[in-house]
Length: 479
Image (cartoon, rainbow, N blue to C red; front, side):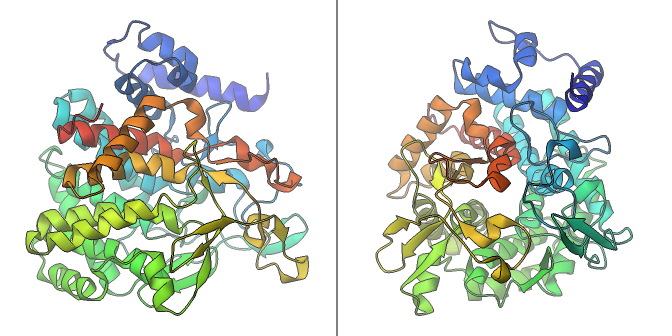
């Protein structure tokens, strides 16, 4: 038996021994699902059954020994990556080991999404198990939050694939933010979604958290708002962006920060938070999509990759602000609906999306780009994916459209009926294959990147429960 598989099975047994017995509400029973792992999704009969399979898996197997939530993991063996899963041939992000990078890339984001899912689950069912799952996810956020006050990221140099690069970047000082904890240690790297989605989940959790936890939630939201009021500088693998002035990124990032400050004000009544919300709303509250921002910058077309996935943050932020600022609600509702529609660009019949496309900013028409790779002398870093184009597809928009379709359906715009249909299809057809990160339908990836097709998308493990329980909590009757 490979060592990685042996460790995985040992961890399964330890987790099962330490978990409370769960109620069996299915004919096959939770025990059968546990033995089948996430493959049980393929035989599940209802959306509820599929969601409960995912939730049990996350609760029992998707946390590291320190309590941090894992991110991307091994699709086949359903476990965290280990160094031996990658060969020197594999091209991965520079800096941390590939296993450390993938295991923790979206750790706070996923913990926040799963916490939010359990908040909606409790609202819909009053199931005490939802509170237990929520408390564990909150602990994962606390562990990450405490890391930002410790030490620095790994220093020194690392040699990978013949290239010597910095192993880490110095952290940003002070509390009030969540880092990407590569290897389970503090780093200076983060992103908008690693802060906005945890803040949103803290805002939701405050209403149902134990009495003794609520002051801590308020403290965290206050510190988060105070920290980011000093500036929105993001460090990601040595690329430094001031998100407020980085165009065309700013419009799709800054509405989320406006929502962070408005949520912080709602819990803490800190007037500085409300002032910052108003300032950002005046600048970015129209919520333009990339089609509008690129057109405004005079670009007739552009290459799109991950901008469509940002619709998750924008749609959630739009709903939060519509609820908290009803006088401005119609503007936010229009914005979130057009962002939901934008997320459909380049989505195939199987609901996967082409990752690299060229988009016409006037018409919204798109085209799949042919495979190409820059000459090695022009590479900006050692990760091959960032230096080429291939007709590969990812599942990010599929999994995000579970929650965003439910939100759009709730608000009753002209997109409400298509959104209802999309939600019903996603949960009616959900299989394990939908947990992939990337797929390669044309077998176009070079050998250095084929590892990407055996990665399980951690975001999906939190997003599918979130979209389901949101719909149940709001009594949308989408199934």
